[in-house]
Every structure is written in structure tokens, then in C-alpha cells.
Length: 385
Image (cartoon, rainbow, N blue to C red):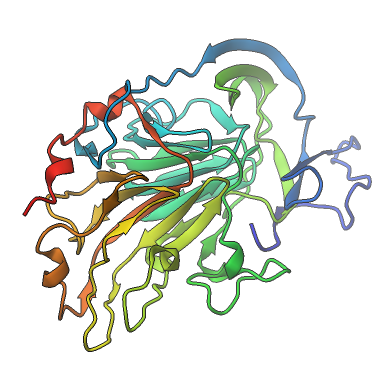
């Protein structure tokens, strides 16, 4: 992330002797982006994090994609996705390209293993539910509206609160998810015009150090495979850490909308960026205030991107027939815009209470067979007056 943070016990300088009560050394682990030139954190373990006892399982992650179909606008009704399993096993992949995979998950069970995505960061948007994200960086409680941003290399698991329904939008990157470059200065500090800043970001709250011996499973996803490793000691044995890289939560309600006299384009809603895509947040806001303003967006052609919108709550001002947890996909190559009556109907309205997450990708997305089972086949014709 963009600011320095620390938890637990650390020595006064890096890479010097730091000894445990029995006189043995704590074991350093540096986790960093872009080799040694990006943000990083330094962790101190009771035991070397390299002590793998057994490589247990390797399985291929197979995503079944739809066969060739005509280019058209799509609408997925994901409200019917069934709940079950844990936060990783419950994922239903809906669309993907080389840069990103977008899934829905409705977990019911806690993760009984630890998980690491080795090829990129993950952003998990919490539509419904609450619980705890546990990692070697500590405990982070999550709630409705949170983006949980988990950097590659972080060891984590999700423990949902018992009896609380969970619904999540999962955005898995092949690269790193970061604040937009235009919102930070060369020191990594958020600028004054940014729609959020460091006060809105919640890092891990408490560091819990485990010293148990037993059999502990760690699953690592990389190169379209998941490999399971067994450890004889608990992998979450960090006594302290510091740095700029760690999982964090940012709540969509803390995004401050940028508004203007006339309709502003979607980049004003941008919240994060990653290689090949951006993530935007549509939040309750005042509409445009020019006396002749048309608040609804104008028709536009996405010549360089596919536009995906996940509808969280409220009434989206430019759409009809959209329900809670709907997903629309407007692909590059054909124009899209407000539904009939919504353009003219937006005139004179002062505000919107819509809440939605948008993902714009710069390479075409391919839908999965699971997505086809959720599709509203009539959506492509919904612009006919």
C-alpha cells in the first residue's frame, strides 16, 4: 500500500540479529513487489517459512468457457448462485481474460487451510456478510461494503461470522491492484483531490502469533494450478512486521464522489487500477447541476474495453430490469447507453442512491459456462422502445 505500518515486535534496524527468548534468531522474510524495487514488508518468524514437510496435492484449475457466440450485451442474474463451501472453494468463475478473473462466491464455511495467490493480487468486495480475514500480518475484520485487497504472496484465510449470510464479488488479478497513479504523489501519499486517502484504509488490527506443532495445510495458486503443502508447525508464526505491503480493507461508503455541472465520465469513479483493468465505485451522489444537464450517461462505444458492472443496491439511473447482485457486460465493439426513457427521465433529478462496482478491462472477456446458466437472454434487446 501507500503508507508505512507496523505490528508486533521488530528490531531497531533491518537485517540485524533479532533473538528469541531462548537465544535463537527470529527468521526474516521479505515480501515485496517488482523484485526489490516496489513496496515491501519485512516479517519476523519463529521458524523459517521454508520448512515444508510434504507436497501433498497438485490439481489443475479448469475454467470451462462458452463456445463462440455473437457479440452482444449480457446480463447475469447472480442472486440465484447457491451458497456453500469456503471463500475459495465457493467461487463461481463468470468471466476472465489473461489479466483478470471475475467470480461470485457465497461461502458458508470457514477456510480450514491457508491460501496464497502467487500470480497476482485479489480484491474481494463484500456485498453481504461479516467475518475475519486472518493472515501472517494479523487479524482484519470485514463488513458489508468492504473491498479486501490481498497482495500476492500473502498467506490468508477467511472466517465468516457464524449464521451471517455471505455474498462476495472476487476480482483476481494477474498483477498488482493499486490506487490510481493520478491520486498519489511521488512519495506514495494520497493527493488532496483523491476521492479517498490513508484515513479510509484499514490495515490489520491485531497480530496473533501461533506456535503450535501439528499438520497445517497451505494451498498456493500459481500457473493455473493449486498446490498443497503440509507444514509441521503453524505457518502464522510472525512476531512482528513493518513496511508498506499488507492486506487492507477499504469500504465503498468511504469513497467520496467527484461531481460536476455536466455529466462526468467513468474515470472519476475509479478506485483501483491493475495491469489490464480498472475498478470503479458508483456511490450515492448529487447529480450534475448545470441548468440544462442530463444526468444519465450518453451513449458511448467502448472501443478499447469491456465494461462489467456489479449492481449492489439502489436504483441504477440508466438501467431497467436490473436487480440486486445483477452483472451487466457491455463489450467493446458495439455502443451502449441508457435504456429507453431513462435519458430523458433523468432530467431534473437531483441525486442518486445507486451503489455498484464496475470493472473495465482492456482485453476482451470470455464468459464461462457457469455464467451462461445465469444469463438473461432478453437483455441484448432491452434497448428496443
